[in-house]
Image 1: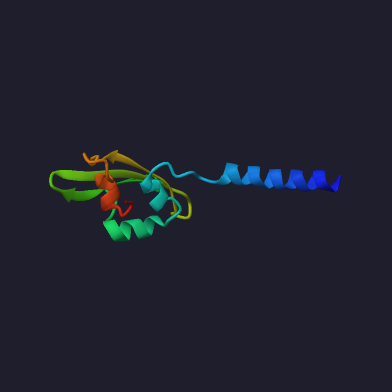
Image 2 (image 1 turned 90 degrees about the vertical axis):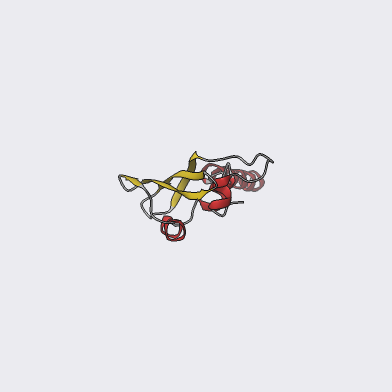
Length: 106
């Protein structure tokens, strides 16, 4: 009986860890999810728009006719919950995208 309870406890713990973890699906998310939006804006400049204090649009990284536009979603603690690209430029050689380079995610 104790063995069954131990197995159940391990399985429940593993399952709860899976449901609460946020998976990063790209290098920008891996770099910025969970970090302070204040740190992001201090490093790269202020957002160009604010939607109710939880969603911000940032634009920058102008270089060679390229620019980067991303949308940040933050929680109440001003921590980045998600970051997604609006405008980006893929590397023709398969390397990091323009936004990944500009936002230190490559």
